[in-house]
Image (cartoon, rainbow, N blue to C red; front, side):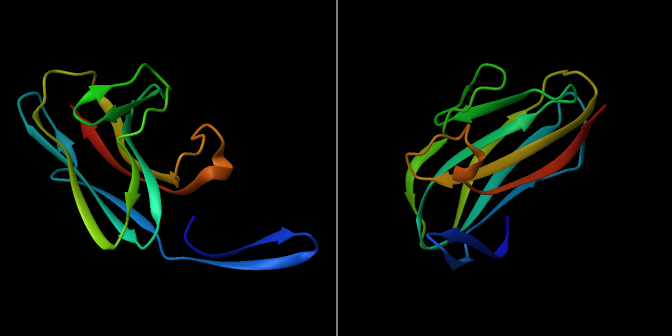
Length: 137
């Protein structure tokens, strides 16, 4: 969700300007076994947020990563980092690994910002979700 949006509160329309942004980046768009995958997330803004990062697999399930590197169970939100106070631009190195042989297909590396200390299962708490696709063959 980028740009301006409005919310109705007690009969008033409240305009909210969203300057917060998350941009995942990868060093390649197609990978093979043995290739190095570098996954970074750049955050922009000036507010406090929680960051979730993960991968969506070709079959549709996702796994989140925590800091330091630990994978969640399928389709379970675990924060990468909570209570991040943004101040302008901040780049975080999430992964820098040599890929083993994994199932071929189209994957997505994602970054999700939520309101701090909120339930990520409730999409109303999401500030922004952005993903970058990649292919493994």
